[in-house]
Length: 434
Image 1 (spheres, rainbow, N blue to C red):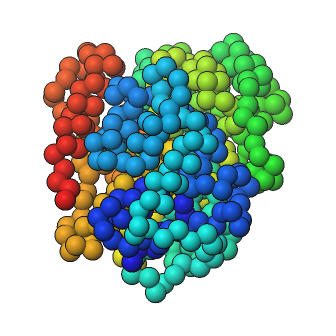
Image 2 (cartoon, rainbow, N blue to C red):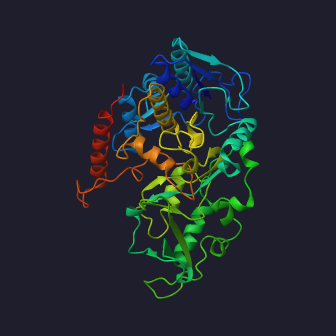
C-alpha cells in the first residue's frame, strides 16, 4: 500500500503511475471538508491560477516537457489534451472539465482508494508515503514536515528574483567584479548612467503589478520588499539599496556608475544568473518590458520571472535525491510544488518521476534517473543539486544539459532549442520502463 497525501496535479499523477501497475494506493484529499485559501472546487487536480499549461511547441521548454510526459503516458497531460480550449500554440484547458475528468479517471481505477480527510501528521506506519500537498500545505502538516526535515527545511514564502540566461547578457556593457574588488569577481555588474537610471525608475514605479490574495498580503515583510515598492519610496531609494554603485568603476568610463545592477550565478553550471534584489510582484510581461531596459539586458532571455507569494516548499537540494526521495527516510517521497518545481506541468513531471520510481522500488528494481538532457531529468537534477540560494524553478532550457559540439555557437536560438528538444525526446524514448 502506498499512501499519497494531496490530490492535486502531482498527487494524481503519482497515484495513476503506481496504480496502473496493480499496486494499492490510498489517496488522501482534504476537500471538500476543508479548503485552502485558494481552492474552491471539490474535485481532484483543481487548477487555481491560469488555465494555461503553456506552449505546445518543442522549441519551448514547457512544450518539450509536455511531450516527454505524453511519451511516458501521463494521465494529467492526457486529460489536459482532452479538455483543451482554443489557445493558439498553447495548451489551455477548461478548468472545470479538466479537474472533473481527472477525478473520474482516478475513480475508475479499482486499486485507488480516495479518502476525503485532512492529514495533520505523516503516517509513519505506512510502507511508502508521498507528500504532494502543494504550495499551500496546512499549518499542522507543515509543522510535522519540519520535524522530519529540520527547522531550516521548510520555506513559507517565495520571494524570487528573475533569472536570465548568461549567454543573453551583453558583456560589452556588463563586467565581472565584486564591490571594492573583494572576493572572486563572481557577480556580473550592469552599470547605469543618470539618464538610464531615471528612465528605468519611472517605468518601474508605473508598471502593472499582480494583485495578491489577502492571505498573501499579510506575509510581506520589510526584509523581502518588492523592488517596485522600494522604488516608490523615492527616486534614489534603489541607489542606496540593491542598485548602490559604491565600490565599482565602470571599465568603459573609468568612473563610478550612477547606479549598478548585479547578477549572481544561480546554478552550478553557471549558465543562469539571477538579478540581485529584484524580487517583484510585477506582471510577467511587465518584468520583461521594464527589466529589459537595464543596460546589458536588452536581449535577455528570462528563464524564470520574479515572484512574491505564499508558497510552502522544502529545501530540496539538502533533503531529496533525483527521485524526490527523502535522504533521511527512504519511506518518504515528496512531489509537486512543495519540492521547488514551479508550474502545472512541472508538478506533473515530478509526480511522474516519483510514481515510476516507487513502482521500481516495490519490484526491487533500480531507480530511474532521468538524463539531464531531458527536461524531466533537468528539473530532477536542479532540485537535488546543492544550491545555497535555492528557489523554486520552472522548466527552461537554461537548466538542461547543453549539447557539446553538436551545434554551432552561431546558430540561432530556435535551432539550438530544436536540437536540444530532439535529443531530449530521443533520450526519453530510450528509457526502459516496464
